[in-house]
Image (cartoon, rainbow, N blue to C red; front, top):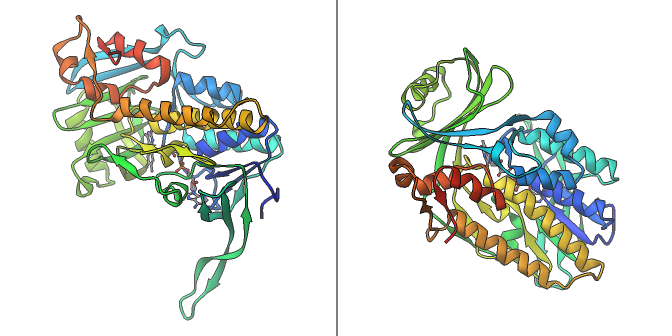
Length: 401
Ligand SMILES: Cc1cc2nc3c(=O)[nH]c(=O)nc-3n(C[C@H](O)[C@H](O)[C@H](O)COP(=O)(O)OP(=O)(O)OC[C@H]3O[C@@H](n4cnc5c(N)ncnc54)[C@H](O)[C@@H]3O)c2cc1C
């Protein structure tokens, strides 16, 4: 069960966001617990790029060495329609200690963060689920259940999860980093605000023969947005937006068809599909990022279409910000107003990124194609914070009003 009878902060969810938030807290000497209802860690290679701003955060958390060495640095993202290259952004022009995009599988980031947590003396409580949360209580009351797997059934045996025991914690703060179906968010009564219908994506991770471009390529046609990510030598990831789930088929034939239609510039031939899946990305933002003792970060608070890798990258920044402000509040250095400030600023930034009211300006030199596609391009720039505007300006766009 929990290590501390009275943790100062309980982090719910040990995905990338929860792990980094817990690491920042633990490094500051805050009594932290981190729980996750699953037992198998680091299964996913889903989100696969870290923004320059995120790399600065990971550096502060002591993770940059493990992470940067394991990833692939890319400096260019190009925007295509058919064979035509219409625009490109170049990260090497950024005034940043990390003027590049780091391609790194989510599972590797999680592994590095969990190893660093271990070095700092904190273990993730895997197989522990948040059962209930009284968010209005001061401090909040969180019931945590330890899950055990039992075998039952005859003549057909099966295994199921049962609650072995449970415990109530009263931490000063709870961070809900528990993903898109966040129990913390639901239990705190926070609703999501939807922005559009969401994006259905057919994802393929493949081995290919022939020359694979060493840059990210975003393909925008009239109705769909697709993306190509180079991975390690000879390997790449495709994400093709499709109309609905019926359009997904994890076969070589379907993959070749999609490449021919959306990426006619690709001369490499897929030789093996490592994995393929159908993913649905909603575009939504929580009406509030928290209040009192309960706060949200990452997919628990927002989701967006995948090309910009915004949800995980912003989530990592949010986890670090919450950890810093909670530490200050716990040590008497700042009032809880700093958390509220964080919540409203972060929500505003998300509204600007995905909200219907976002305004994207075109600068005088912007091409007709860029002008036409401008709101779609903004969602497809893998960058955040202060880095976003200078990169957008390279293609003739601006978010500044
Ligand atoms: C197939 C696929 C492809 C993807 N590709 C991309 C991409 O290309 N670009 C991109 O930006 N994003 C992508 N994503 C999304 C990306 O994986 C998420 O943005 C990222 O994982 C969010 O991290 P997180 O830490 O906020 O939440 P998560 O990684 O979802 O972690 C939440 C954790 O909370 C735990 N949890 C949930 N409820 C409870 C509870 N009640 N008690 C205890 N623990 C709980 C879960 O077990 C989970 O481990 C993809 C996702 C999928 C599924």
